[in-house]
Amino acid sequence: MDVILIAAVDCNEKGNKVICEKFSVRRFPSLLTFTKQHPKGDKFDFDRLKRSFDKLLWHVETYLLPTCGPEHIDKCSEEQLEPTALISFSKAALDAMVEAAQAEIDKLVGDLDVFAEELDGLQGDA
Image 1 (cartoon, helix red, strand yellow):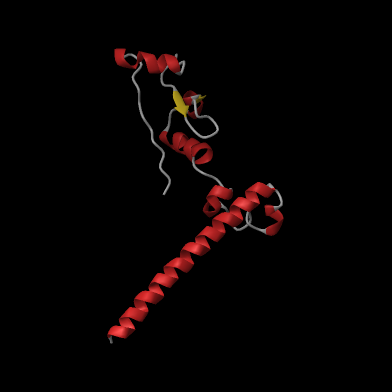
Image 2 (image 1 turned 90 degrees about the horizontal axis):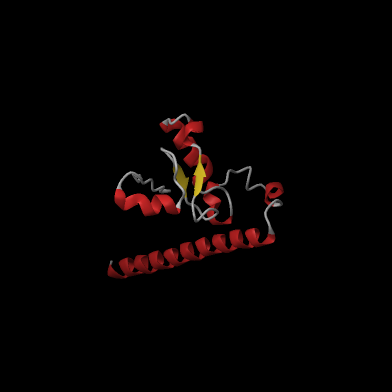
């Protein structure tokens, strides 16, 4: 499950002035998102979203949640994993996908080994 943390800061409160100045918050409401691409914050126009929850949810799902890529293969559709679609990935991205898949295989093999040992132990007790 993906988690998005949303926090509210009241810039009118004395203790919050420093953080509001740091991120150049001048109007209210202002929304900033922090991602790997924008670790220092990225402002977007909440008024453009008509200040509705549905529009905010759309923004989060579209721009903030992980998308298909080497680190999030689980977010890829079957079409995105078709060989012709994989051509658009860089060699480094494909290598990362293979490495992630191999790590998952290794984990499953390890789990299977543990299960087999437990099963052998149960058969020895019988």
